[in-house]
Image (cartoon, rainbow over all chains, first blue to last red; front, side, top):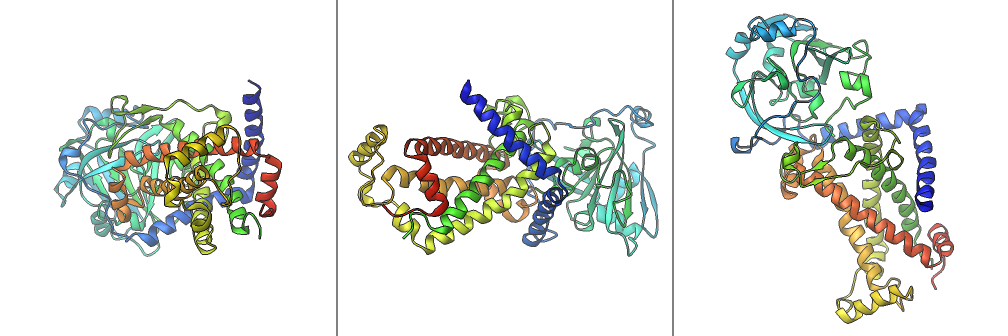
Length: 246
Length: 221
C-alpha cells in the first residue's frame, strides 16, 4: 500500500497547486477566458443559423429522462398542474416595444416547428425526443426588441433548493431557427417531468440551458443584476459555464 | 546533435501537464455520469455497455466533486493540448524526427524480429542498435502521436454540442455522440496505459539520464 500512499501524496500536492491556481484572481480569469475562446471558436466555425442534427421519428428514445426539478411543489405550480395548465400565461417583457401575455391556446395557434433532436445533459447522457412549438424569434419579433436588448432571459416557475430557476442566451441563440418554446414532446403535451406546460429548446447547448416550466421571456441589456449575475440558476449556484456549447 | 530536439522537449513537458490535468478533471466528469453507451443516445442502466467505477477524490481535479470546476479545467487545458499536438506534428515533420526515428520500415514488421524485440524488453535490454528507437518504441510513440492523442481531440470535439452543426460528419463517423463519448473514455485509458508503461520503462532504463536528456536535450550516443 506504500506505492498507493505515495501516489495519493503526489496527487494531493498537485491538487493543492491546481486549486491554488483556480482560486487566484488570474486563475479564475484564465478559466473563465477559456470558455469564451470556445464560444468564439464555435461562432467562427459555425454559421449562426447552422442546425443541430435532426433525427427520424424512429430514433426517439423510449422515454425522456427528467433532471433537476421534475415535480415542482412551490407557489402556484401545483394549482396550475391540477387545472391542466388551463390558466397558464407566458409573458414576453423587458426591453420590448409591445409586451405580450399569451395563453397556451395563443401559443398553439402560432406557426409551429416540430423537430426530433438530441438532448445532451452536462452530466454526459443523451436522449432523443420530438419537440413542437413556435420559434422564439416569432415572439421576439411580435413584441419588438428595443435597441439595447442583448440577452433573452427565461423565467421559470420552479424553485430548486430555495432559488428560482432561470436561464439566458444571447441573441444569436435566441433567434436560431431551432430555438422553440416547446409545448409538446413526442406529439403529447409536455409531461411535468420534462417542463410542463412550456419549456425552451436551445438545441446547440447543454440541457441546463433548456429552461422548463417557463413563465416569462424577458429581453435585457445585461445579466449583471439578475440572480447572482452569472446568467442562470446553475451558473449562479455551482459555477457552470454560461456558454454551454462545450 | 542533441538526442531530443528543443521542440520535442518543450512539447513533451507541456503535453505531460495537459494530459495529467485533462485526465484528472476527466475522472470528475466521468463521476458525474458513470455509464457509457453506444450510438446517439443513452441515459439509463439498461442501455449502458459499461458502468465505470467511481474514481476517488484524490485521483480527480479539483479533489472534490465539482463538475463545473472540472469542466473549467478540462476546457482550458484542451487548448494547449490540441494546439501543442498540432505544433509537435508540424515540428517533427519539419525536422524529420517522425520519418527518421518513429516511422517503422517494412522489414521491421517481421514476426521474428518483433519477438526478439519483445524478449529484449523482457531482459531489460534497451539497446536499439543504429536506430534511435527499437520497433516497440516506434510502434508505441507512433500510436500515441498518430492515433491516441489525435483521437482524444476528435472525440472531444464530437461530444461538444456547439461543434456538431458544423462537424456532424465527425460525430456520424464516430458512430453518434454517445459512441464518441465512449471512445473518448477508451482512448483516455489507452493513454493512461501508455503513461504507466512509459514511466516504468524510464525508471528501468536510468531515469536520471533519461529525464536529464528530456530537459537539456542530451547527446547522441
